[in-house]
Amino acid sequence: MTTITRPERARRQLDWAAEQLANCRLCPHRCAVNRRRGKRGRCGAGAGVAYFQEFVNFSEEPELSPSHALLLTGCNLRCTFCHTAERLHDPAPVRRLTVTGLRRLAARGRAEGARNLNLYGGEPFVNLPGLLALVADSAEADLPPLVWNTNLYCAAEALAALDGIPAVWLADFKFGNNRCAEKIAGATAYWDVLRERLLELYRREPGKLLLRHLVLPGHVTCCTEPVLRWVAANLPGVRVSLRTAYLVMPAARGEPDLGRFLTPAEVAQARRLAAELGLELVPGADSAPPAAAAPAAADRGSVLEAEFVLSPRGEIYLRNAPREMMRLARELAGQTPANANPPEHCPGVRQGAKRRPEPFLTTDDTDGHG
Ligand code: SF4
Image 1 (cartoon, protein in one colour):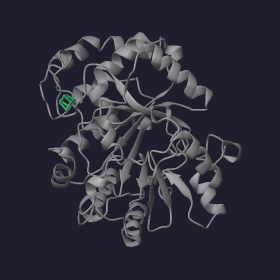
Image 2: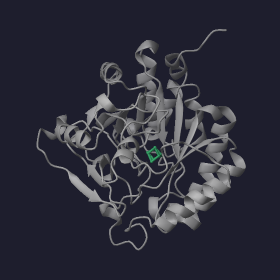
Image 3: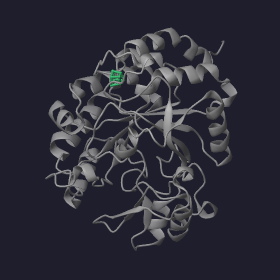
Image 4: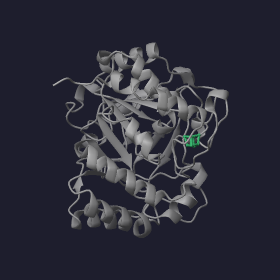
């Protein structure tokens, strides 16, 4: 049987991708702008692909870590709890992604132990035309397995255009109704769109689907419960990464629910429900805050400056830290590569947490706040 390579698959979609750039309807916002002529829609994405950060992340779900994170600009949602919002639409520090650059990044990720290239940001779907062009112009051997780390708020045609290209669909299912999605993320008909896309993915590639849900303070009943119940009823056997490491971002400060941390009762309620429903939870993802990421610091110089957040559980989160500081933090938390678990396990916080009942250092780049 002849295997169709990913570049070949991408090349078949280039005409469609070009049409989208000229009249963008890649997601339910259907902005209909001509991105080739410099117009920008709600997502702010242009015609090419740009990224603002990349690093090898040791704290993704165990089956993905270490994972080479590539944070793309542009997003079609406006979640008030987004970790990267301040950099998503900032044109200053971004770098354009070229075929040569992609090959170099992939080679460096491999050399640092990454098992895949994790495309997020931002939202990869709003960058779909440019990403298809990059894949089409690459050699199959140069492309690592691709993790499509997405909010899945996309058009059905966009999903179809990627058929056979990602190795893993890492999909966020954030809200359990349209009202919360509209209010928190500015997304209309979210609940309807997400269920349709998830059913399609499940029909096509169930084994490649890994679902994330971040439990939001004050939204266990209205969001977590309907999400988990729907998944249990409609996507049997799908692995679920239940995230409980919610952090308060500046945009959410002062809000009655999203302006606070999760209570232990909310965490327990979400976990209990997942257990009652018999969901296949990804080991290590539930209680583990995101950890041991080493954000690239090239564009930040060597200034030892970062943001710290102390959670009620005694965890210290480190944001936007330069590489030198991350190295030190990981050493302090017992997360050095030398004592990390082998790749099939998630090195980092869970391992360190067992040895250290004290609060530990971690980072917050990758727990789906976006
Ligand atoms: S991808 Fe961006 S420009 Fe296109 S429809 Fe969605 S928000 Fe609008």
